[in-house]
Length: 322
Image 1 (cartoon, rainbow, N blue to C red):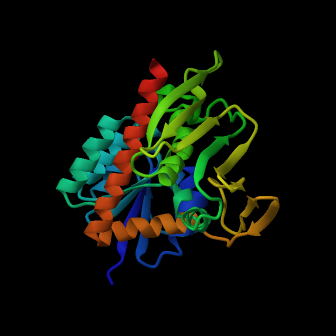
Image 2: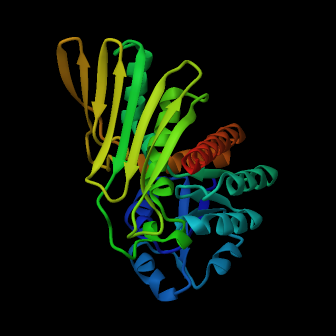
């Protein structure tokens, strides 16, 4: 099988610390090089992982030997460089969020479909085996009928120069940590899940939203309550409440490689703590991207997932503006 040759736009920390080590475990993809507007920033990548350092994003996109692009740029740049990558005939693996608006996302998805190119939004937690375990427990009726989902994701304030607090770079809690519980709720409630109420929180210290909350509901009346923030004590929790029991886990979005998640199952008067398998969600996410490139049906399904997330993020924004 011919390997998919991949380049990286930007020398971000996640590309160096997480993406390239994960990529090295995926036999179907081959790392070619990384681009930066400052060639000096590519040197640690080249010295550690090999490949070529490109002196501009345009130079990398013009390389006809490259099949796919990983884009870990700040969110405000996703649309511009995602579009340029697709127009250059490259498949794209985009860090979340795919873009900063539903309109831009839909435009890129239509362009990808027109050019028969694969796209992927890197919400890694979706591809950790702990979520598969939870979904199976729900399907098997381990906690009875679903009554309520609660999902929270928040972390302490970061450095003032972090892009998350910069409006021009697509900062804000909703676009950063808010997308996680929204995406998880949609996964557990199903395709009919919609935002019923939403709110954003602001602080005079920042020009962007620093937190928010929402209620989602599906056509069966099942509800998820979510909260998120980036000036909070750390929380990364999922609680699923059923008619005869409940499931709880506290690393649903950020379980790292080498970590065995602990899941608590309460049923009637009994409580079990289950140690789940270790997994590498980044590797699994990259492998799904590879499947989207190789299989048209998988690529179509992934475009639908990305579009649904963009629509729900748009619903949240509209609700919070009321």
